[in-house]
Image (cartoon, one colour):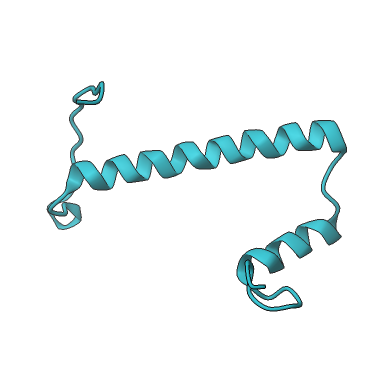
Length: 75
């Protein structure tokens, strides 16, 4: 079994799902991934300079699938 720590969380009854532990674990993992991406982006900018508005718009279009050439990941 993975190394775990038991904690207590109080939620309103209407927010409690069948698999609360799984839900909370996924939410924590998502938050950690977001923090790691943020740290990676800061490191990139320290090495290569700030992102330009053009590059940010290009990245957002790629993520949303509106970049020229079709959805992100399409060949």
